[in-house]
Amino acid sequence: MKTNRENGTTILVVAASMLLLIGVAALAIDLGGLRLDRRADRLATDAAATAGAASINPFAGSAADQACATAWAYLLLNLGDEGATTQPPNCATFAPSCSAPNVARQTTAIAPPYTVVITHPVPDSHPLMAGQAINPNFDGTPCQRLGVELTRVRDFAFGGVLGDPDGSTTVRSVAKIGAGVGAGEVVPLLVLEPFSCDALYTSGQGKVTVSYFNDSPGFIVVDSDGSKNSPPNSCNGANSFTIDSQGTQNGWIRAIPVPAPKNIPSAILSYALSGDPAADPAEAYDPADISSPASGIDPSDPPASAFRLYPRPVGVTRRITRAPIDWRYNCKSSYPAYLGVIPIVPCPDTPAAHIDSLIAAYSVSAGDPTAFGYTAWSSVYSCSPSSDITTAPGINWWIDCDPFFVNGIDVDVVIPDGNVIADGDIDLGAGATLTINANNASDSTLFVRAGGSLTKGAQSSITLNRTFVYLADGNVDLVGGVGGLNWSAPTGGVFEDLSLWSESPVQHEIGGQAGNTLTGTFFTPLADPFSLTGQSGQFQTDAQFLTRRLEVKGQGEVLMKPDPDRQTLIPIREVRLIR
Image 1 (cartoon, helix red, strand yellow):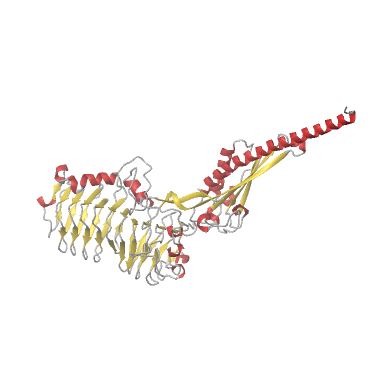
Image 2 (tube, rainbow, N blue to C red; image 1 turned 30 degrees about the vertical axis):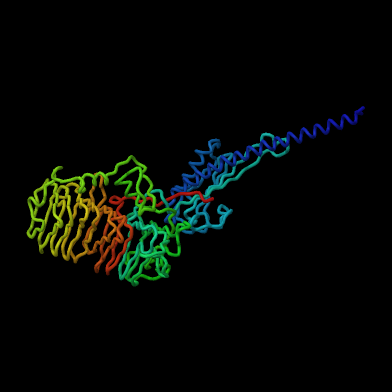
């Protein structure tokens, strides 16, 4: 029989056990709440950091005041249970440019139960970057990063019984904006070769300068990963690089930044620096070029750009490929792989295959163009005119000649308007001139059927006003002498801004003389190479070139000045979470 003392002891043990059980249950419930808070809060900071980083210029020592405001707005949107803001973030902290990348700038905001710290730049040594080794190809630069740290205080449901009335959780996210596939930029030069060296190169005293336009700095993109180990253009040699200024100190490859007071840096983007296991970063560019002074640069260019290669190339996370031009002018739900190996992402818009439709309507298989309203040239004029010709307006011409040869000094052939289909070569002899769409009142198309090329001899001149040229499998060879070349793209319609589309793999060449004008996009995705040949003096162009390989040779400078209104924007920005 138990004594009263034993009964009292049992009651105390049971009471203590119940208190312990209640404490454990309370701890489990309260800690579970903290875990749920942490999970939800991390989703919110991930979204805030990503949205904010998208407002940073990845190629500049960019201000981040807008990034801060965007991150704060996304936090308020995604948290949902915050109280009234008692301390908003001072985003003006980030308004100056990021000129000191190793000095973190921070602002703190409070909306109970949350305290938020926004950081830009995020240096490599910052606690936000802890947890894994820095990978420059993946993590980018400090000025490309935006950090968001969120601390939540939660009142415990049962913890107060145990003398612990509340707890807190802290989560951190860092996002980076860098070169990748995302928002569009004005890119005057995109080299599509996926593997070989000498994808972009200059020789002799050849110079390529991609300048700036308003707030658009110079951009060059090279898709080659530098992995090719067999001829031609192998990367096995000791001096083989995907980007290479091979000539003298009077030659260079340069992208020019927007000068002060805006100071928006330029960029050369290289897939060889992507971090892809198949890519070879050692073959991206000749390191000697970035420290070798260049002679004869424009005095108005920033002194920092006075080198044979400027700026130092940086990695792009994905190949850009030919997709941006295909999407705009030949939008389809699927494409064949580029060169049989590089996948092309399907067009995200409603299919509208304008190039395919043009080929179906105008190619040899479409038959005699007189059946659909064209006038045969040979029925009215010679295929080798030796005297001036100005055709009547309002006529679409089928040049049923192979070749069509304009011969003789001062022989001028003028087609005032309309479209032109050519059965073969269009060739200008010495001193001759050809003008298509002379009235320049509407857009025109020159469709050169299979086997035909567009060539000119010494001192001859070609003017193509608002004219889109399609070459089935020929090439352009417009080098001869000092004759002029004036070529502008359509200003409207389905081929707006497109000057040339050629799927031919043979070399294309345009010679540069002062006074030449080129505008619009020149798309030669298989040209091996596309050669821009400068004479003495400067060949200035507002055109955009997308080609397999590009060489610049001769004694002059090819100066590309981007025009956002006459080019296809190329997606080269990408935001990703890195911590």
